[in-house]
Image (cartoon, rainbow, N blue to C red; front, side, top):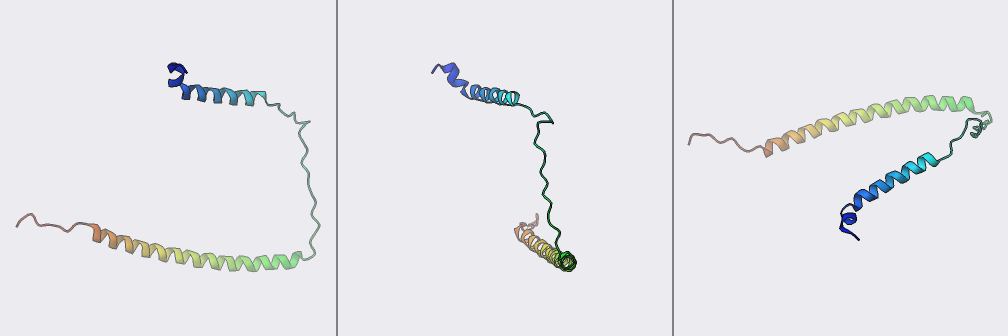
Length: 102
């Protein structure tokens, strides 16, 4: 392989990839709106237990709020502990102050 091609092999490869990508994008057939497939909608049957389901969801919402509140409290407590640990580590890592006068 000639040295000019060998030295510029990466550039040649990148150029080939870009040209191929442009060729693929330009060559793709475009769909006219009249040819586009129509969306298919499926009608779900009405559920007879809808009222029970709604009541259950309301209960779950209250329980979820309580769980989220407890999780937020735990995160705050953990953040406070993390801060204390980091402060202690910083205290240990700082070098002791040495008096300039002997």
